[in-house]
Image 1 (cartoon, rainbow, N blue to C red):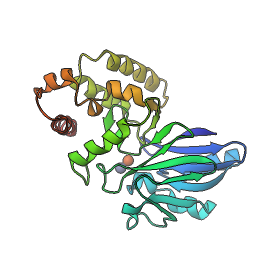
Image 2 (cartoon, rainbow, N blue to C red; image 1 turned 30 degrees about the vertical axis):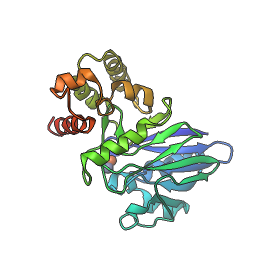
Image 3 (cartoon, rainbow, N blue to C red; image 1 turned 60 degrees about the horizontal axis):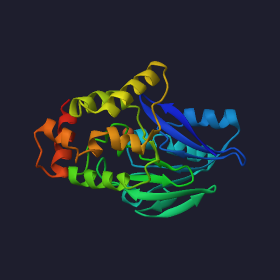
Image 4 (cartoon, helix red, strand yellow; image 1 turned 180 degrees about the horizontal axis):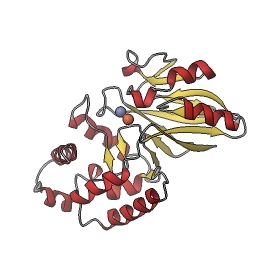
Length: 253
Ligand code: ZN
Ligand code: FE
């Protein structure tokens, strides 16, 4: 079993979970259908399921065509039932299910959108987190409050440290520059920036990241860090206040 990363649109990633033995596969957040259909055809794979983290077009754009071409079943959040067409399996917080022998657990993570969910797979030790967590960043608050996003990120922080983080966009390098401005003395972040720069120079995805690296480098997960607080002039603020300030500065950066 492996995770295939398929670049799509400007900076999206589509993830295809492939069982090489059975030739069955599951797609997560198909921004568009063509690159997925091409991959399936070239490798002789069946598509059994489509998993969506949220309703935005760059995450469900390929749903309809993939479903009609392959008969794949759509799995998505109960909160998005009214705005993701053709859902076959509605899931909600803490739901656990097995597809093609792969374990999934749903974690409800409102913040970017009201219905946003992420999929944790113990089979892959991986989190498919859509637009909730990015490497060195987090999703914009389109429908929800900073408090909701902050809470959602705490749930992700509680996952095993070695969880592979599969986020849906290649934003890492841009995020790294912002993170360096928030957290200028962080040595681990400097190393990560060098690493990301090299990957992007070679046109490689920076995804997946590892949760331990995000905990060490992602300012949105480091709201208790003294050096960041000092830099922001928020030494005695709550973690939520620090988070809100970092999100605001990112929005205005
Ligand atoms: Zn989105
Ligand atoms: Fe997106």
